[in-house]
Length: 326
Ligand code: SF4
Ligand code: MG
Image (cartoon, rainbow, N blue to C red; front, side):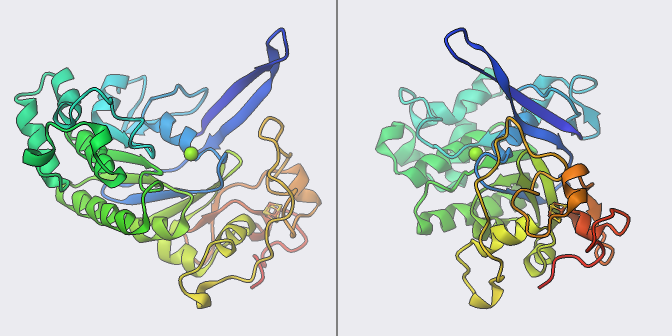
């Protein structure tokens, strides 16, 4: 709730403060037990920073992280959070210690936590992710393919019995066919272990395949959240429409005829006033520059939330209440 993270930028020969990158600025959302929440947006929109905040890898400036009803720093310690939440990153090679065998990598966390028989647990997890422990236990990361290494990372995360797994571009480096296999594996594991996922990707088709709901970020803020079917049939926010129209559609009927995004993404050190998208939005009016829109439910669909004055009849936007024309 209300998560904020600004990174100070230092520069010049004296290393003086140049400003702050507003990486995440007032982000609120919930992840329901057993669902997969997909987070999309261009690079630099704050997806990865949000992920790192969620697992306590970086410290928030403001806001609350509530896991199982307990707020981090209050009734929930960082240690408790890290026990319940695991993360899988994109670069499967860089996240594995090259000097540890696969078995030792998978067993590592369980050993640190003093769990019973970490080797046995690691073998079971390897088996479950499709890596025969008899073949792979004593190999090293460089002897594996990208897809196999990512299976190791998944096994390593699962060995800690997490309830929430945050996957940040976890399949993005893989070939398409391997990507599909790993996505299917992730779906099966979610089912089998009753897991909950936050799935971050720049690839909308991948996010659609695995997610129940989709959250769209722009310049450190949430602009739209909706169930997959709802957002696929109607992208409410003008930014979401641009994002979807830029995607290589599998089905030409699903293409929206939105013109490509105008201009460069604004500087996150000094983001635009009001609605942060107003410098690139073809519907922007005076009120958009002055006031930031709140995230609110579309009247027809309460579980589809959008932050745009076009949907808020009381906003003073000349086209308010009409939404984005088809
Ligand atoms: Fe465009 Fe205004 Fe909506 Fe922002 S609030 S997306 S500028 S219409
Ligand atoms: Mg990222």
